[in-house]
Length: 205
Image 1 (cartoon, rainbow, N blue to C red):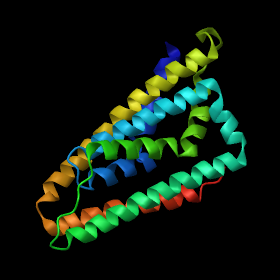
Image 2: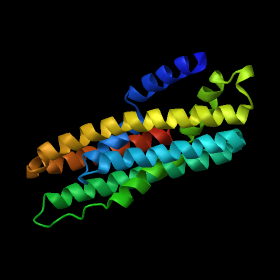
Image 3: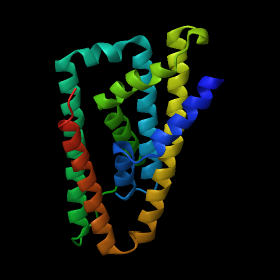
């Protein structure tokens, strides 16, 4: 019980603090789809679950020990974010013209959140550094403890991210009827994702 009294507040504090995932969610929410913020948060949540399972079976540790694997995953994630940012900027440019821009489907937004989370090696590194701090000798098998901790972290992260997603969606709806603001929101969305991609590309192992 003492472990959970420490772990849950730590999770909430970490997940409520604005970071790359939250900026990604806000960029998606501002991008146009009416449920984009929530769907991006859900996609990221599933990616956290994936990282939990990888940590439990030890694959994350093996990948992070390989400089080549770390670099490949890092650049793949950075390239994907840059691609999303560029597409968002192009969509914003089309909004400024008398041609209807194509809105992303909810499934596309969800997949983007999932891919961004899975292709970020810093998330795997975080899980390997953070979760073991709350493993105890009396808590049972270590893999089982890591799984429980990872599931609770995923739940709290998804709830917190969802709140930011709702906030972004509300802002987007309040400005959606104004064409000039819609163009600006699209550009902000694209700029945020490009900045996140550049930041990830510069990450050191």
